[in-house]
Amino acid sequence: MSVTHQLLKLFQVDKQLRGLRSRLDAAERFLEQQRTLLKEIDEKSTAVNSQTKHLRAGIANDEGEAARYEAKISGLREQINSVKTAKEYNAGLTELNNYKESKTKHEDAAVENMAKLEQLDSQAADMKKQREERARIVSGAETDRVTKEAEIKDRVEELTAQRKAMTDGIPKDALTTLEALIKLRGDDAMAPVEVLDRRNLEYACTACMMTLPVETVSAMLAGKLTKCVSCHCIIYTEEDLLPVKPTPKAKPVKKQVAKAGPV
Ligand SMILES: [Zn+2]
Image 1 (cartoon, rainbow, N blue to C red):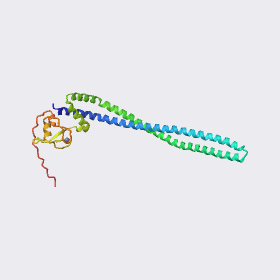
Image 2: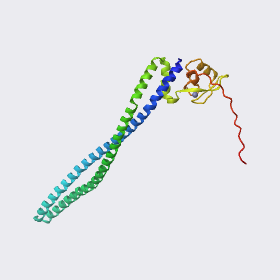
Image 3: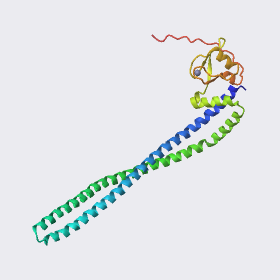
Image 4: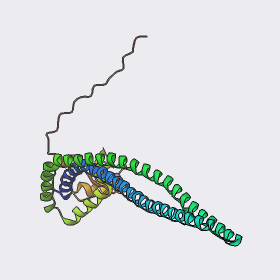
């Protein structure tokens, strides 16, 4: 068996393996995407929760301060009532106004933050819903991944063992060449040639449809590992690789004469 033939057999097993894995890969990619989205929601929720906590503490502080000023105001009012001079009275009023101003400042801040808190609470509720929905999708995607893996497991093991047995007999450099090409070109790593004119060694690569130079064709026909000069895939002749069949007798080609249709 030529190296090309060995590579082709390996390539075919590899193609089946890739085909099987691609379904699992797609399921894994989807699961990964969904997990990322769920993580994003969790991160946003954490941020909102921390903002909420911060706001609540701020509101409690402002309410406390407002109450403290209210107590001061009541005390001061009593004092003002018992002052003797107009000067003391005016000084008392100025202080009272300062206290009132401070109290209002804290009350306003508390009201403003309560409005923000309301928004955050609604955001948090919204995110909770989003999270539930996303968690459901993640769980479905996990089940799907496990199912797909189980479906292909036996066949993948079988093919992997076959592949391993095949690689053992292939020269290392040829194997490296094929593996690099598979990585780069996938199913187009190897391609059969099409015979255009056998006698004149006119062959074309079926991967890129370009005609191959005579020396490339000769090398390939001599059993050497050969690449297409245009697309660099490994080329092979299908007929060389098929078991030899008795040549069927050429059937005479009946010429189809177009019948004149009804006029
Ligand atoms: Zn080509």
